[in-house]
Image (cartoon, rainbow, N blue to C red; front, side, top):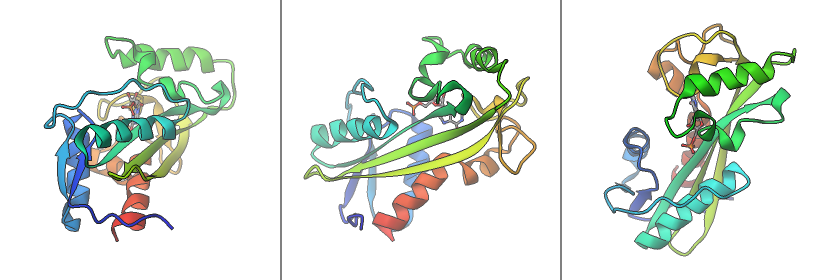
Length: 198
Ligand code: IMP
């Protein structure tokens, strides 16, 4: 049984304003005041973990300790089965310092060229850390297929080459609200809310 969340304030351990807004909206019904790592001027730790859960936890833990408050962090990525789960933890890094995702997507296509299996999944792990150090993690996944060439200009990252199972469009072609309703992040958030806030 996950611990229930009864704290009055929660730090979102992210400097991504889009992510912070999305989480704040999700938690709006639960009387929790949400404050971002940016507002508190908290440093972002290096993502040195060897799993998505470890990275989410180390980010949440760093913010919880620095602020003396509960903190929530997420870590996510694209895992391609034929590539042994790559780019995985290195999803952001494959785009290089210029955050060039055309380059990262071209790399996925190049490596995947000789494989018949084009299956992949997006994964998101959320970590919620209490001021006393207790941690709960929640994982969400969405499975799909890598398509070549890329299609669509919506979304971000690897969206233009990912077709979720049961659909024929890439996430890059999805309307943002339709994508957000079914993502790996949505699945993880729902588990978090059901387990700790309901
Ligand atoms: P994070 O911010 O460390 O979790 O890095 C996640 C990386 O995974 C992003 O930079 C994207 O490359 C990729 N990623 C995660 N979620 C998505 C998604 O919904 N669409 C496309 N790419 C994603």
